[in-house]
Image (cartoon, rainbow, N blue to C red):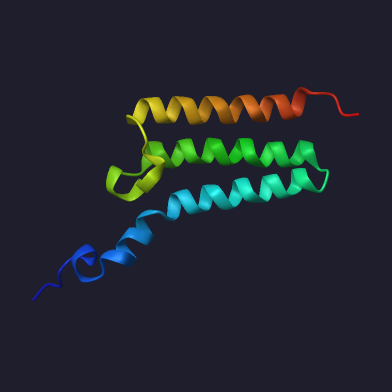
Length: 99
């Protein structure tokens, strides 16, 4: 006899598990912002940029039912905007001369 799916047995837990990709991205961005706050702005921006690129990869490879709130628009638009912003922030953090 098969068990019913998780979303019918424990809908709250299933909802939390669906948001794990977003939580991972938010933790990485929070770490980057913390680094910026303690005056390591170049490394902090690099972490934020790489977190955005990681979010784009997660949005690209995960199905819609697993990606949670990372899915805002259509998949191609989400991937292009997140990856473009992440690459731009990463490149700028590397290219801007330090003081």
